[in-house]
Image (tube, rainbow, N blue to C red; front, side, top):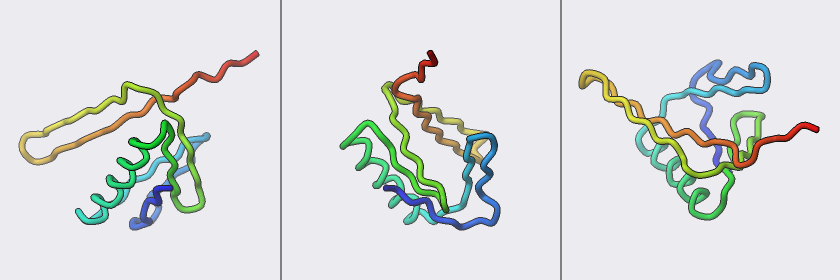
Length: 91
């Protein structure tokens, strides 16, 4: 299970079933997180994360969306978006 480091105060806001997380990492901390993510991607179709008191298991499907935004040579954003593997059906 990947554990996200708690660095910044008030970095997680549970809002109606959603968890938002943002922090600042050293390049070594980021590399360790990405290595753990890679291990999960290579071995299964779920991502397990632990953030503070929350444990998240997310079953995803392919394709995975990768977005890159290069802003005026001042900022580079890389976003990875996973989609739910199967839709929940209500009866």
